[in-house]
Length: 150
Image (tube, rainbow, N blue to C red; front, side, top):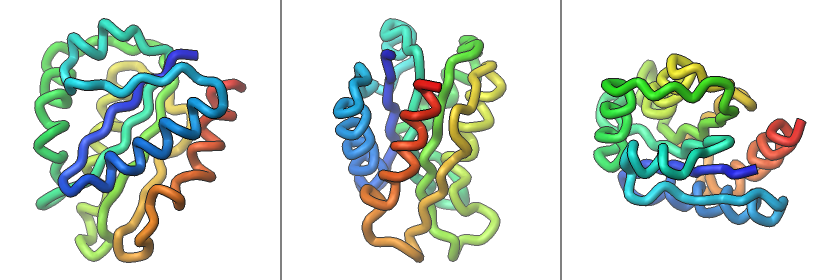
């Protein structure tokens, strides 16, 4: 299976989680590509069979600057990902209350609108509770791999 990983980060933590997820997925035998640059045409050219988004939240529940242009282009051009399985790892801080992990939630909602199929419920990693989000995500990533194979 050809998995494309998209990451959007402010301080690099979501990218670190994406790096760990990539290593785990490759070790499980998946063909993995990171989307670089974060452009819709580059994503479509990769023709993903599955998607994984690792996304932090900034400000008042916004997407990181690195990911926002891709999000807006996807929303405007509306490319369908009908039936493509996806997962989202959202990073945030519960101290921000209602906006906790909203960057990831925005990506999740968009992929559902684009007719993607959520393979694994979104993982929310709380900066107030963990200092090792990359290792904390491992069980979820393993379950995501299993769901992709299911």
